[in-house]
Image (cartoon, rainbow, N blue to C red; front, side, top):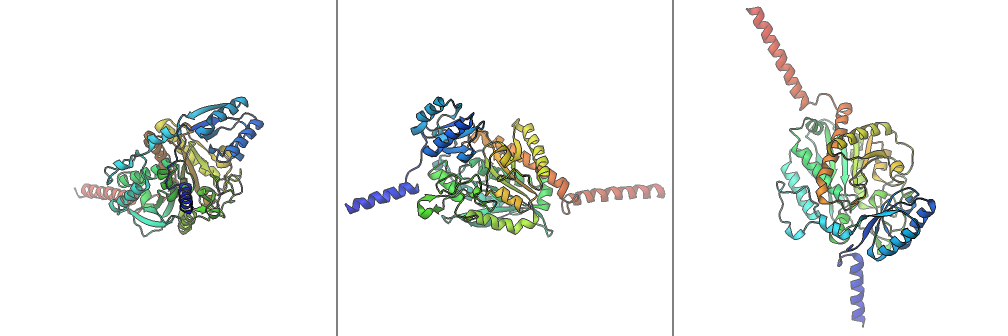
Length: 459
């Protein structure tokens, strides 16, 4: 009997840890619900708490309010009752995702078919698991060693390395810094895909594109392709819609901290939870997590030269400005807004896709402990949070066929921002790059003029 008890305990432990059974979402749906009155909003809050529903937007029940759209993932076991309750309460809703699992299956790669990769064959229009991304990182650093170095950022709770790229032409001069991270939230695969797309584009165009060439001579890009490595792997192996990291909490009774609620920017004051099983659990203390500590350490190292911080998320089609914990505008709000508005105009020209710009607390919802707010409090001039496609039709399950247009329009918007930086904050003549070219042109012109004058007077 004791033997069977140990087996039962072991099976239960493994199941709880998520190492044996992959979570499936067969028959689950995502509903877009719009409570029209405060009573309806309160009812939806109570229902979400009672059934522990997975809110996709907003992140917390406290942000459910009258007139605001709520995107909620409803398990098949509660679906009929949920819809009946909404009808009884006259709360408008529509189904945005008919079957969550079918949508997941469309985006996942058959891992058995993935063999050795090369940069020539690497498919940037598909989502890739972490082992493939690690291999891709090695290939990038080897092929582009003239302009790229790979560095160890830190490690995760499960002892996996977190790496970042430093991208820029070597220079003896002090260079400005643009820092970008992707994959803070594990389930936001399009963010990870974008960081890879970004790396490819700036590296392949490093010599042919005048703007990128000049940027790389005066700016060092620090790019973290996947910050939340444990969480990202967990979404591939066990639970596709996992959001947090995988650190054990409360004596191992629950797992994970929302890394984008863990920074020391009015930590856990609003839009976050102290309950460890919440998807927006802020952690036991500010910057408690290894991933947060690692990013902060790098941040402080380059802070004196940092001009821009970019953190990539989805979904919502937004470019968010600080702050999330208050409606007060940041010190550089007007300039940030001008730059972002110009950027979204370029996005619209490319794929006719409408993005919105504004402070997080004003156009999205209240949050605290976010990386962009912390960056703004560190006096970084430009601190943006991108919420990529879409606006709710697919949510966190953006199909792979949308990777290309999403990345194209996002890169276009960033190049617009970089062009502004070039105009306002970089040297007009880039020594070793544009200045050499321009200087050579002037030299040749003056030499030709001198020859002509000499020839005219001597004859």
